[in-house]
Length: 436
Image (spheres, rainbow, N blue to C red):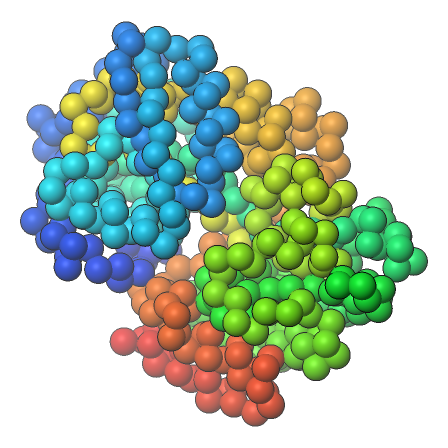
């Protein structure tokens, strides 16, 4: 059987995010369909793959460098096979993968932001591993969103690499200095604003909050959950109409506009394109802000971090479930050995003793409750947020939301840094792009 077959919603993701792969020479790339294709269901191999001392190559993008290094180091220390890891700057990753795919030069394994996975699967960049996944006793426990994103025509090509969700991080030391309870983060956007302003009043180079004010993807990842927390949608079910001029959405924009007008946001917020949007918090200069959960251990090195769900205007909580998927490339001739790494990646040793130990979300539902999560209430909070999170999909998502000139970014900038008079018109522009 095939686990987690693609839903109609996930199917829409496959046409999401036009990323120029054809221009990079991938139009002629064919997928691994057919009974004799490498790694297809007809060539399932053993559940564990082969560990015979082979050298494997793996690419991943820079935001997941810490997790990738931990996983590769643990695998290399316990296996005859050895993985050589290449970390690629985030902004260069799509072009590097595209160029390599067009020339037959992909590594044995490569990871990708989950929103790009469906496009790359349809382009034929990954080998079919359906039969191999089916042999895993815990196949039905693997994160279904990542499996579905990597499914095409009932064949599975990708497993979860690292899950990422958005939550609120707050600086416990600054909270205490500001007279706030360091063990109680905001439970509504109203409290978020109040607590940010309280920290901002400390002065001395400390600011209340920070956000990527010129980064559509950052704002999607961190502000969409504020709408979902109020049980509202950001788009219609078909992904063809924007609902981001709702009263709830306007409350979100108004909260941040007030923080900007009150000068409670860090310097550089307006122009932040995403490259350094978490740096001010890690430097101990920010009170509270939405944040990628995968960076908990990194932030912990310099800040005493509190974690809370991202709330809506009046409470609740939600998150954007993202992260990276990983698969065996179409160019690899070491399928059995590459699968050995992937099957280990899904094992309890990797999920619990590497990822959970590092404070990351595990990719198997049966391993969510483990010794490390139970020892750190913050990880429990992150796992609970992940269980109720969402991933929005639309055919033209990239153009509507993530692109540097997206109408979503225009809406936010006009609403937060401008006079907020064009929200409805800007929302109509998002719909115009979504419905093309």
